[in-house]
Every structure is written in structure tokens, then in C-alpha cells.
Length: 478
Image 1: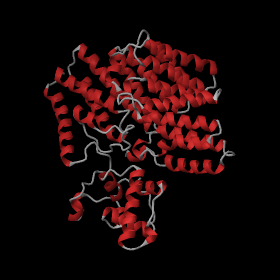
Image 2 (image 1 turned 135 degrees about the horizontal axis):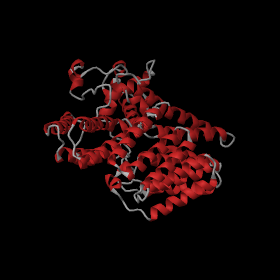
Image 3 (image 1 turned 60 degrees about the vertical axis):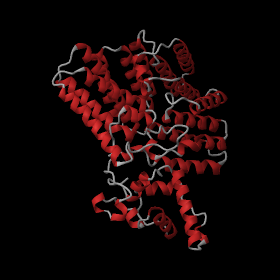
Image 4 (image 1 turned 180 degrees about the horizontal axis):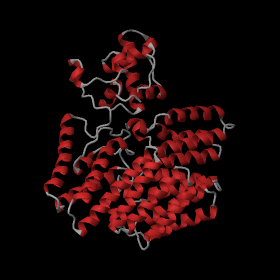
């Protein structure tokens, strides 16, 4: 994508049309309206493909669209098509008729620090809402309020002087909790700026502030959680090296906090990073290290570690170890006692739908029982469709859907696989993180290997996956 967003992209975000299905409906409606007004039946039913939409949205356009497409785009936005496909001007350079309708954001996504009450009200993008919030504020007033909240947090930290007071610590705790809850539900560009700022604040307070021992332990824990989320963010952007660096920092913070559950949680995160980086043996080793660090920890991190072990051993082809780890996860779930990490919620806890997803993925990749893999994947998908807001995560739901597609390909049900993966391919660019695109690529590879069955359907789906994975979330982060 271009360094500066195109005017078409800015206007699409302004109108909340960034989901392909929404944009297509608007495009088709505009085409039908022109057809009636200008008595031009050729435009009746004119549509736009997902691949073409993504080229326009991402700025990857080298030539003008076809004339009829130009007419529709100009009718949709009220702007000449050459201006639409050019870099967006600043508000001061726009014509008066345009400046009244929208504000051009800077090239990078706007990230703001929201009060926890407002953050809770943000659309989750879950089962009842297919659109994802890209900018944390849609109006200038919202952005001003959010910037003021961020400034207030920085000021309170500095106003208390070189020693850290309870108000500052409480504000940081609330902000970290807001981010842990938001991370599984919202697209990364919405959160990244806040994560970086909170990590920087905790580091500066630990480096230069006078901190009492009990405050230091809590501050190290908060710094560790934030570093862990930034490790996950680096992973979601496809940078395992940066992810591991952040994870090691998180582990150092957990050590300084002397927090057994946090040590185990970081080892879980390192196992996840290694798994998606194609290093299953290393992923299994980190899971073992995490289980050693957990000791008598009874929170849901113990369930996560066992599930991570199951997935890693499945990729290694060790059926006995995979089944043992699945059973271990069930045993750990039966004795779970929620701890202070679970109290943060979101990314810091491991709910049952996520367990079902991990077990399904392990079963599918082990490949010993395709029917069992399909039934477990169906159970995981169903769990996410009925999950509560606290349990839902768009990335894990997408993973369950791709696992179901893989299981159906293994059973020769290509049309069923297309149906299973369809919701994933409809995700907007903001949600196409590394794990999701990697899962889609696994489906692509399975279709290629199974190309003898339903060749036409398989080829069409492979092409769609290629277009989907060509524009991941990382193109939005500069």
C-alpha cells in the first residue's frame, strides 16, 4: 500500500465501507441508480470483485479503472476518479465541498487512548457485527477527548514526582486491563499506538521513578503484560524475531515481579510464536518450560500450555504425545481456579472456545482420524458463534473455520471447505493478521495437494486465498 493513503481509502473508512460486502452493495446500488437515471441498462447489475476492491482500497492501482467503473466510483464518492486514486490531500488542500464531509487522517492509523467506559462501547466485530473499528475515533470531538485522556495519564505520572503514587498505578492498571480485553476483539491498528505508549510509560517509571517494593512488583507485572501484548502484536504482523525479543523482555519483567503465572504465560506466548514460525519442536519445548514455571498455578494458563503442547506434537506427528496433551488440558480445565491474570480478561485468559479450537487444530493436523477432526472443528466453530463477548476472539474463530475447511478437504468435501472458509476470506484487511493468513495458506496448500477432486472449485478457492493473503494487516502499519 502507498505510504500516504489514497482519497478512496480515506473516504471508504470515513463511511465505514471497508468491509468488501458493504462496499460491493454500495457499488451495485450506485450502478443501478446510474442505469435508471441515464437510461443505460449496461450498468444494471454491474459489480466489483473482491480482488479489484482490495487493489483500490490498498492503493495498488497502476491504471485507471474501466470507464463504467469510473462512472460508478465518481457517483459513490462525488469526486473525480483520478483524485480518488491519488494520495489523499490534507484538509487544508481540499475543496470546500469536500472538507465539509470528512477529515483526512495521517498516513498511519490514528490510535488513541480511550477511557475504559468508551472502549467497552466500541463495536467488537464479533458475531453480531461484521465491521471492525479501524480508527478509535470517528469524529474530531471523539479524537480530542481521547487525546486528552492520553495526556492526562502522562501528566498524572509526572505530577506525582519521582515517586509513583496510587493514582498513577491505578490508571496504568486500568489502561492495561482495557487493552488486554480489547486485543482479541479489535484489529491491531486500533490498539498498537496505545500499547507502545503504555509500555514506554511503565519502562520510564521503572527506570527513573522511586518505586516502593510492592509498587515495583505491580509495575513490573503491568510492564510484562504490555510487553507480552507487543510480542503478540509483532507476531500478528509476521515478525517472529521482534516478537521473541518482546517476549523475552516480558519474561524479565515477570521475573522481577516474581510472578509464577506470568512466567508461565510468557512461555505460552513463546510457544505460540514458535508454532506459527514453523518450529514445532521449539514450540513443544517452550510449553514444557511453561509447565515447569507454572508450578502450583491453577489459572487458565495451565490449560493453554497443555493445548499448545498438543498442537506442537501434532505437527511433529507424535500421536501419543498429542492425545496425552489433550487429556492434560481437560484435566487442567477441571481444576481451574481463576487467578489475577485471568482477572485481566481478554488475551490474558484462555476460555473454553479457545480450548476447543486448539484441540480441533491438533486433531486435524495429526491426521489420524479425519472424521474426528471435522467434528471437533465444527464444535469449535459453533462455540465461537455462541461465545460471550468476553470469550470471543476474531483470530481464534478464523482459525477454527480454517481447521474445519482443512478437515473437509481431507474428507474430499471441497464445497464444504469453501463454505467453512468463506467467513475468513470476508475479513477486512485490518483483521488479516499473520496467524489468519498462515491458516488460509494451509488451506491453499491442502487444496493444491487435493486438486484432483472438484478441480474447478479448488482452483477458484486457491485464487481467492492468494488474493486474500496478498494484502495482510502489515500493509497498514508503517
